[in-house]
Length: 406
Ligand SMILES: [Zn+2]
Image (cartoon, rainbow, N blue to C red; front, side):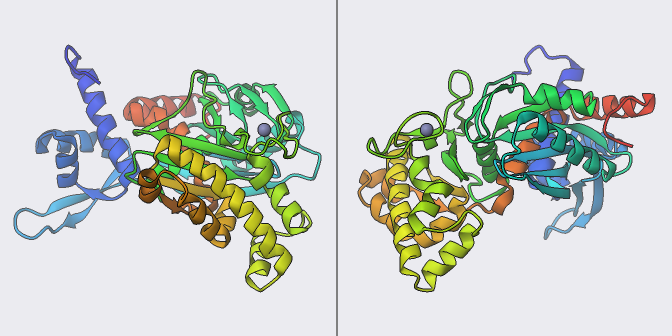
């Protein structure tokens, strides 16, 4: 942001946003770290911090001794001051959480669907129930900032229309609108692609911290990709970039839910793993991997087949995008440790330079990458204008308008 010609209020808001962003991303810190991070002088940082303390967004803690010189006061975000509702909508279940300022999960719920109950109206009704339950458990007097939702499909940006979610059977679903209407909330509802959100969270708090070029793969029934290039999420013209699961890798392969033949997800998605290992849908992927490890030949051969196909796609992505890290999320999180040797063997056939550089990683956020990424997308207004959003939130609560806080 250029501050040339900005008013004093705009400069102050910009500086507050920088402090709040740093605290949200890094957690507990000290005044002197904030001074060196923002480049502002000590008394300016002190003044801004007292405004944030007065708004209950941050609290000061005991001085942090740093060898010689004056000790610096500690500063930390107050997780219960402001929160978002985060939702990871999957093909077989919904995971929803209250996430506090600073990224801490305060409440979490998981709700599985019965097979064949993924119709939009049913899922929205279930989501609304889960959200109400979570809102009742939200911290008292906290300001609700927004709702973030991750969806396994093509999501148009910036309006969040779910254009196509093949494994849910959804076409052109205005999920955000439906959810906002049903919840009666006056805060933004942001809908994004599940893998894009996973990439954001792993880069912010997970196994790709500090990496400028990241591919987050999310394997479920389908396979999605969130791609960060030179520090920015790759969106494409309308927000649909990164659908790596629909790379054509096997022209003589199986039909995909998207209508094409031989997409990557038809070789490495969960149904492909079950076909290859002759296991029923009721058996957890972790158990298939455990069986292979215990000497079950059918399971081991199936994992090898899936691992080799996994390698085919990863090599193409590494050659095209030269990532620092590829993060294997969803079911791939369980498959990678068992199939790593096949993926690495395939990588040795990648172009040598990018193949040597890339790290194959498991998500440090475990199963919560998309959930936490959805939270990040919902926190954006607070990180942009902290005191404005807090004042507006408390204003709504004071007028008794549904704001999510009690
Ligand atoms: Zn496809």
